[in-house]
Length: 219
Image 1 (cartoon, rainbow, N blue to C red):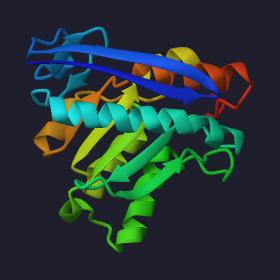
Image 2: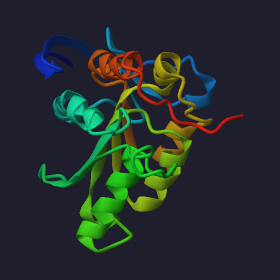
Image 3: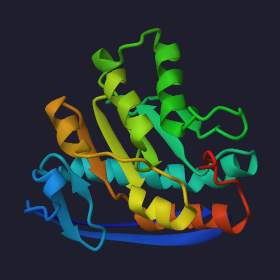
């Protein structure tokens, strides 16, 4: 099964062209920690803990590109360079929040945690599972956010830039996450990652190059 898609996104008044040419097939994963990983064998190397679904991936590409395009405005208002949205199966946005660690002086306020808290408040429940919600986020969740997602009842996670690149570009410490794709699969949580990475990396580079705060405790 194959799919060709082209997209354009405006970020900081600059046109970014993205192209995805995907040849979907299951492959053996070379990472022993995630032996059951599925890969989209293409220039983007999308990864998932289920056989890759073209419809799900296309939807995620559109949403994550839009989130990346909005990041400039959030950063200008003092947010960190990450944005997350909780969306239901019909495309309704339950919440959309940026990272607010610096602006609100709270280390827990990552984009994913903020989005989960806002969705729970809006829906009046600590257990989101009955609402069949997905979380879309511009970069891979850190170790804290993985725990928050697991306990929230979120059914699926779609992310952009992988943690390794986040750390290389910014210096943020994303923590350790052994076997998290497999552990989420065991708990019925779908994961797709490395979606529209180029657009996401541009946001991170711009954040660093404009002297914004890379927040983490002193060691």
